[in-house]
Amino acid sequence: MSSAETATPAATDARAERRAKRIAKHLTSFAKQHGGSADGVVEYVGAVATRIVVVGADGTWGDQVAPSYAVGRRAAELAGVTLHDDFEGELGLKVRTGPYEWKRMAGIQIGG
Image (cartoon, rainbow, N blue to C red; front, side, top):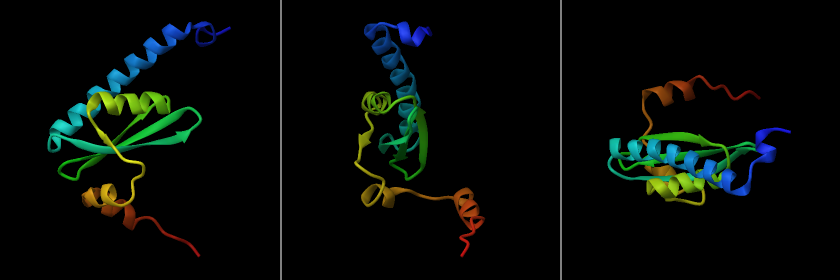
């Protein structure tokens, strides 16, 4: 039996909170470097991961991966990230793309 299978609910909750705090530090640092605040969205990546996409006040974007949706939401909450339901609309319009993104997009070919 693995330690994850034998962990008590309190130990599991404490571990999740530590992970959320660690991720929140990165999100807070990002916000400070990019205008002082951030908006974001928490999205499922799969059964074992969640992606937190954040957009700073200056339009720069980044992301962090969390082990669960609950940890991702908690990290965003601790960091003061304003969460949106999806990345479309107002949040998507805030994103400022740079040369890196344009170069990457130019390399993507849509076949037919």
